[in-house]
Image 1 (spheres, rainbow over the protein chains, first blue to last red):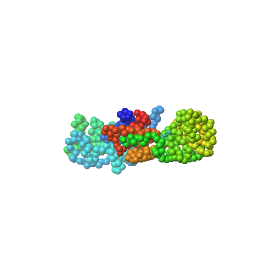
Image 2 (cartoon, rainbow over the protein chains, first blue to last red):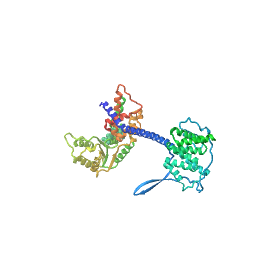
Image 3 (tube, helix red, strand yellow):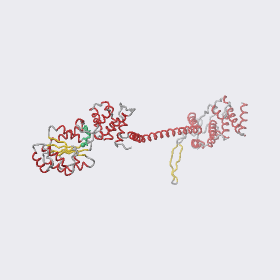
Image 4 (cartoon, protein in one colour):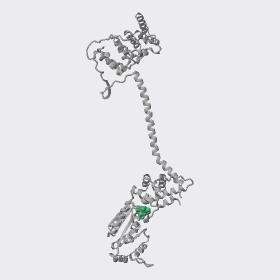
Length: 253
Length: 269
Ligand SMILES: Nc1ncnc2c1ncn2[C@@H]1O[C@H](COP(=O)(O)OP(=O)(O)O)[C@@H](O)[C@H]1O
Ligand SMILES: [Mg+2]
């Protein structure tokens, strides 16, 4: 008989040839799956990380209208923030609430390394909320209680408040803290000081307004605590003066 | 003797009537040819690719009709026209041609004319593509006498069928074409062939997928199919003879089909 070994070899070769396209296909599919899985993994990691960061520091962007404006033949995309939900349209004067909040005396615990944050955490009315939540709360409250009646169109700080949503500028937050403090809206002043401090804790003014706002609402203990922790970082004269003042006031009480 | 040796021999080419398998297409061709022969036709052309069963059909007709009518089967054509006419002379005149004499074509024609209406002779000419023009012309003249009916079987290759047809165009009254069989019929063919010899078990192992594979190589051509089946069993026979052969009798080997196909050149490696 003819060479069967040779025929067998040829058959193996044939089988090999036949399986090559399948082999390639399988490898290609495997590579694709591997690539896809890894990309998804990397992506989810990135997304998680991004969410962590952005949740902590930045509120979710408010939806914007995108308008395409043509200027000297170049196309630019201009983002126009959507107007905030309507607040009370009445033209009444700004009305500051004098409501005194409950003071929680168990706050004076300094085992936390950063009492500024721990005090915020413990503060009953200012939970550790994202600035966005704070803003939302505020808008809600304005609807419910009408403590603040803002002249909508003319007030600069309102514009700044809106702008801040997109700008995330610590200077804007500080400006708002300052303005609300001046307007004796201590709760809002405190909130904006907190936001400003979150964005830039080097800023002395944010610490001081925060403490002053607390004190203005009668929470001397907290104010002292805040100033104390700030003084551990710096040797601010203003902070020391305030601290003395509040300590004196507290002892008088 | 190895059963595989017997098995492979089932698929040796043969036109033996005992090996005839009644397939639908074969039966149809048979009936068509039978009808044509029964009618007063002078020439019938039977054509188809090599291995489509022309010889088998002619032989089948011949064996079935030989006791009913004057019918003669000319298988492989004699290379020498002299031989052809010697044979022809004998069956027409029923006399042996004396030695050292040649058939005079004109007298042969005259003789044929003389028997017209008295006798009806049918001649089955297999492999007629091998006759040259001159011979074919003489055949045509003989059929024109009205006493001889010719069934001319011609191999149809890609272009030849046209030539064959052209040559006889004016004389041919009927054309029968044989084609390759379908996959279904191929299955029937292989199974019936095996069952005829009582190889039930083997026939049972040959499944649709094996038929599919065999069909893909042979395209339903009888001769090609015979070649493949023969080769497959030959390979079986070889492996069976090996010291520690591991032939699985429960399953028909796809590998052996492919090996046979490689061996026969259907697959180029
Ligand atoms: N009806 C049939 N039954 C059994 N075997 C057949 C049949 N038709 C064809 N064959 C097989 O096919 C082979 C080739 O057929 P054949 O008549 O010689 O082809 P062709 O003359 O057209 O070249 C035969 O040897 C025979 O084994
Ligand atoms: Mg033949």
